Figure 1 (tube, each protein chain N blue to C red):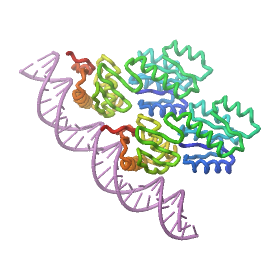
Figure 2: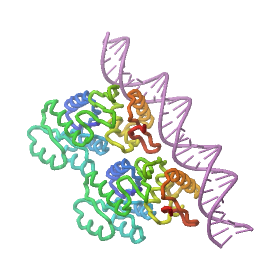
Figure 3: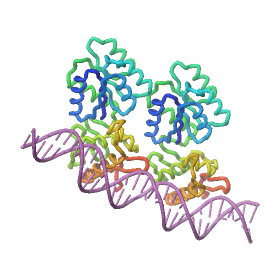
Figure 4: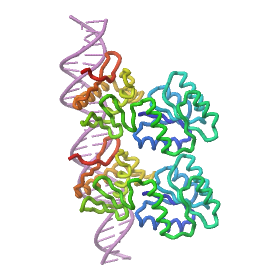
Length: 226
Length: 226
DNA sequence: AAAAAATTTTAAGGTTCATTTAAGTTATAA
DNA sequence: TTATAACTTAAATGAACCTTAAAATTTTTT
């Protein structure tokens, strides 16, 4: 899962970043509204943490512009405790939840999980399942029957995304955006390498699920014919 | 399915493009009315997403000119929320539906599916059916009863087009335009080769549907006499 | 602070397979 | 019958994809 923090207090932002990194989220940061908007518009994030009081472009205006451009990414507003009105405004403008500063780590994590789960469907509390494989994306372990292997963060993100898209074919450029962000110089080969890593681990698991490539279109999960 | 987005807000257009690409639609874009009209007149699109407020040639004028030239492609108007009158005008001018900005992804997808289904009535969410064959154009699989074969991208596009034109005869140059674009040096033989590939796969399926050639005119689907 | 381990990235070479080309064959209409 | 259009197949091409190893980077351990 890729999150975007838009927060001008650099210390706070970095603290949140570290906290979330340790929970295996991929985290990007911006320290002002304009950069934040640019990033939000790329539409590659699963969740945006948005401060309201910011220089250049404040959080509420950012939110408004973003929604106007059709970006539906869930937004968790970070508000100072005396900004009750802003909070209401924010929710009316399309924010999905808010959290008053200062907040407890646990509460932040819980709300993030809640927002991410809301869109999740096949996701049951930190686990994603497809046919006979189960990915625990907190511990980065992939299970099949009794066997299991541990995945790296990138491997996990890739598989997570494939599972969440069910039977749809996922093109490489979408995967690049998801795993490396929008302005990266990662190339197709990077994806291919990780697909290869995953296949090797799935082979070891002897699972009935495999990654199918549809030449020219992308990758999808399928259940092996017996 | 090939869609055309005519929308001057580049960010929004690209967001929609990406969204639709991920749903395996083929997507072209224009950022002003004149280019939009040129493209619309080629009559190779299954659906046009048309913004109203645009430089050079606005959406409503574009729509009028296009209909005057006999182009019947379904049009989904994208309107800002305060353009109620334009919306009504648009529908009177031959638009098929409208959507107010900002809109939710899901709603856009739903309306697109609805419009495509309306004309196709054979199209059910990623599938096209003709008599006893069903083409899943997301996974590029052609099914008949229990058997199935996988198609390549070009084979799928070709069959997709034939099915979507129901019993009409489709000339080779139209197919060339559809599969290879306008300025290509693909020749008739390229089409013939792919028709041949498809026939072989359909033979394997033992289906009752076949591709009929009408000498000098083109190809059409027909149900075999028993 | 250095060493070791793990992860990620880069690079190269090899393989596969969709697509194109081309040539010989067959069918059709005038 | 003859010219043209369409069909089929095999071979050539080239892009897409795979795999592996080594280099670079990051993280963890000593």
